[in-house]
Structures are given as structure tokens and as C-alpha cells.
Length: 514
Image 1 (cartoon, rainbow, N blue to C red):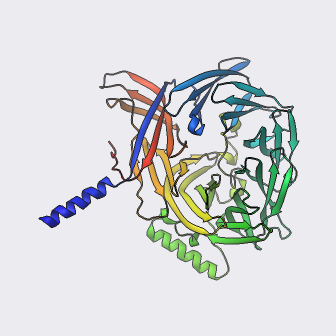
Image 2: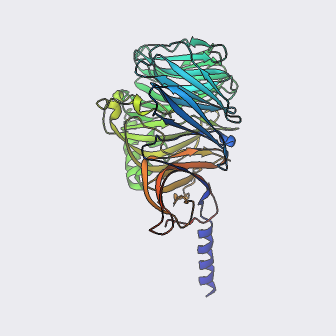
């Protein structure tokens, strides 16, 4: 009897020790199905900026901008009048201000930047002189300079636009043939930024040029990653420059550029000496874990056998990397991997690119006959933790069951806090979350988002409008459009845009699924 009670107590204790998805707050706005979707921008501890366009005007349309605090109290609401033809493409939040970048279509010669003070609601508008007919892919703000990157005549180009003095500077060392823009990253000093782009070396192996500029667009330093013969570097993200040293991480392919074989880690020290390491996907502890133990073991064994012959196994996957995270003594690489349904991924404009800093509107992707509309499938989220010299500490993973078309956007959200990552995504009316710390016993927690009233019933959800956003500290945002029946079956039916503030809290039992 005592043994039974002990076992029962231990079982109950293990149940209460399970992590829990906690719903903290919910926010709703009335919504009509013909309305444009809201754009949510994290202002970290200052709250959220909500942006929505209303295209009813003939010559101008309104851009509604709302500011919420972290408890979803509305602080202010403003309206900006925008000339028709301008579409919102990018956004950036930094130091209490949100920047919106719009481009005029279809000619794409003009851009407009709105600077919004998140505390006061004051809006400033900047209209630089006409630039090149630019296919914009990147938008960042550093100090008082907007950094805009994209393509002109299929070649990468980056501009530094001094907002205060209305001056545009074209960055050197970027515009070249057979090159792809990989990353624009503002460094931790908030004074410099990196631009990564591919190029071919003398052996016709694809490598990466790492350029660093000050906030005015003046070149600080540049170097080319030294890659082994037949090893092509196809995607990458960079760390800040720490004591003149730097780490660049990405994926590589073997004897071709269309299908990756593994990940590379490059460390350059303060003397300029580079250390390059290649890890086949099969050498990474948990890269294939999403396939299940048996299949993952087969993949690893095959990769090891082929490597012993001096070759590499290539896989039809592509990464969508987030910006590298830095803490006191670690570098955190996070990305969502996708499987394409076409072997020739060179023709995908998004192959090799990273998380978009803004978003693409519908008008920017109307070519349904192009390979931009091709299908893909998310496979898994993957975290790789390094020390400051690029040595692997641990990795972790979570399967992601989502198909898509067109240009991929981030599916879930990732937060790094206190030596542990948390990945959250929203799928088919449920929140999925996992703590990522390299331990094997972390389960995936699944739960519902709470509605405003316990008596409310969720009747319909527009899955194309839902998403997950990392917010601040340990908190995430889950959002979307829902049709909700109030109370009993004969209650009112309301259509709302909702936002739920959630977190994954350890050592608590979840409520489960209704």
C-alpha cells in the first residue's frame, strides 16, 4: 500500500511539474472580412504597434496606426494619408520609434518612410529623391539612417538614407554580377552594420563577402570567407564584431549551389585569421531528429558513409534564419527549415535569404506564373548554440507541420532567455510550444488560446491571417481573425481580430485541450 501511494504521489508530482502555456491577456477589435489584415510590430517593453490600411479613397488611402501597451491598453491612435500606389513593404523598431517603409508601384522608383514616436504618436514623413527601380528585400534603421537593400537589374545594391539631412549614399563593394544579398544586420554597438552577399572566387566556388559599414554608410572593413574547393556557401548570418573577431554561420552545398549538404561555421580572429568548419547535417546531433529515431539514424549513417569517401550528401531543404542572437558568452543560431518541391531551388528568389525584416504586400507578388509561387513545406525549427569562437555547445529541434506557397515568412516565434530558447507556433487553433536547451526530456506543450469569456465558442478561424510573434522577455503574441459565438448557441456572432499574450512557464501543469 505504501509503495502504491509513493508511486501515485510521484506520478502526480510529475504531472504538476510539466510546463504550461499560460494565457495572460486577450485583445479584440471588431473585424469585417473585407478589411485588410493588421500588421503587428513589437515595440518590446513599450508594447505593440498595429497598422491597418483602408483603400477606399480614390487618390489617397488611410493608414490607421494604433499603439497598445503590454496590457493591451490603447495609448493613442493616428491616421496617415498615403498616396495610392504606395504599398507598405518594411518596418523596423528601434529605441522607441517605429519606422514604416513604403514603395510606389508599379514603377518602384519612389519610396516613403514614416517615423512614429511610440510614446507620443508623433509621425514624421520622409520622401527621398527618386532612386533606382529597386526590388526591395531589406530594411533596417541605425541611428538616423535608413538602410535599404534589394536588387537593381538582378544585382544586389544597398543604400544608406540619412533621414535628417535627406542624403542617399550607395554602399561600395555590393553591386556585382552573379551575387545574392543575404543579410543586413545592425551590430550590437548600434554604430555599425554588416552586409553579407554571395560572390564567386577564382575557383568558381560560391563564397560570401562580409562588409561592415558605419551608420553613415562609410566602409569599415570587408573580407571574403575562405571556402574549400567544391564547397559552395549559399546562405549565412553574422554576429556583431566582438573585440575585432566575428562569427559567420550558414549552410553549404557540395559541387552545386541548389541543395545544401550541411552547415558551416567561420570564425575570424582579431588578426584576420579565419577558421572554417563544415558540419554535414548528419554530424549535427539533432538536425534530423524531427524524422523520428529510426529514419534519423539511417540518414546519419548514410551521410557518414558518403563522407568517408570524400563526398557529401545533399538535401532538398532551405533555411530561413533569424538574426543571430548574442548573450555574454554564447551565440544562438535559430532558423526554420523548408523542403521545396522542386530540385532546382536556384530559381527560387527566396532561397538563401533570411527572415524578412518587414513583410511583402499582395501587390508585390502578383506573378502567379513565376517560381515565386512554387510550393514548399516547413520541416522543423532548429537551434544551434555556439561559444564566441564558433564551437558548438548544443542543438535542439521541433517539427513544424505547415505547407505554403510563394515567398516564405516566419511561421513561429523564438525567444532566448536565461540560457534557454523557447519556440512557439500557432496551428489549427492550437498553440504549440517547446523549451529548447539541448535536453531530450522537453516535451512539446499544446494548448488552446483563451477566449474573452469562458462561455464563448470559437466557430471559425481564418488560418491565412493567424500567426505568432515574439514580443519581449518571455512573452509571445498569437494573433488572427476569428468568428466567435457569445454564450449559448443562440448568442451573438461576432468577427474579431484577436491578440493573445502568452508564455511558456516551466514546472506547471497545462490545462490541456478542450
